[in-house]
Image (cartoon, rainbow, N blue to C red; front, top):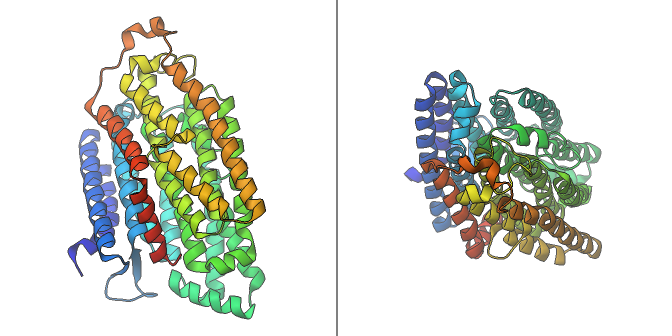
Length: 499
């Protein structure tokens, strides 16, 4: 085995170790360690991506000398390496962009705990991407939940405490349903390894045994992970949690955390049950329906908001809907569109939240639309980043969001008549609604009105904030300009995935 093939396991272990060390360090030292570790894991993940692309295959990494089911193992292919690289890089840029807010919003003695939670969260995302075992997935789903709630709560305010409580209650409900599905599935198959479960499920499906329990299990997995990823109508906790958290937390929660649960759901659908079983049970039709509703209702919620961060949070509900519509089309093209949307949203929404944090800095700490009038003039770099992110969300060509809508449209055209019409109508309506709240927001931040109220608050750029904004802008434009390489990598990854 080559050295690079150990990197996925080392990324998980390094992340856990970094979390432990940050807990005993002071805030500044924990910051340096966390950023160094994230840079290292991003480089390691990129090396794994290059290796898997060159080898054009996947490999199984077994931990210890025991094979599954006694030992644990992870599966590494092009899709997993691509997701890991994107997630690690976005985490790094999100922390850099909101670093000033982390030290301003968190109590000094708790700052190191913020970086501890970031490290634990990243370890859980790596594990969810790479794991080949359902119970391991559950363990890291719980680590993800605890760390995510802590990232919201570490900003000391009454709003964040209430938001965290709601977030925790809904997350625990989703985790409970997910665990119940694992328990019933283990009772039927006696297996926890994904490939082993898939063999048993195919055998049961061919004989017609346990038909109702299998339907219930798929329903438990789908609802549990839909709750945790804020699919409509289980999204009510999201605007408060993402809207009240510090800038880096909002960026991480929206861009990464929601997607980790969806990646687990995709694995369960296509590596545990298989497309034939999922289509027969008709679960994907419900995900498609709720995805369409999320696209519309999330955008309507954003349109009604006058708080910038809550508007962006509702927009995330709509963007999650795009992913579920792709999954609900139960086709290879639909799954490609869903995976592309995971990546496109990951490099877009954190940029918007980081820019929103910059606007607050030059608007007296306020985030209402009236308060941030002209903020793009006082913070030109943040204004450019917000504009690029907004145009991407609308779906303007040459930006990341356009690639998603193009892929989803192609997937819809290849589906049945009802699904095709519904998906195309939803994409058109959602795009119009996106424009109705993002375009006025762009005009608002560059307006000359309100400049006199914050004349002395013109931004003084910090290197970390500037680097984050520039890198996010380049990532987004690069994604749109070289989309054929991204889509090609996703397509090849799904082929190795068995799709």
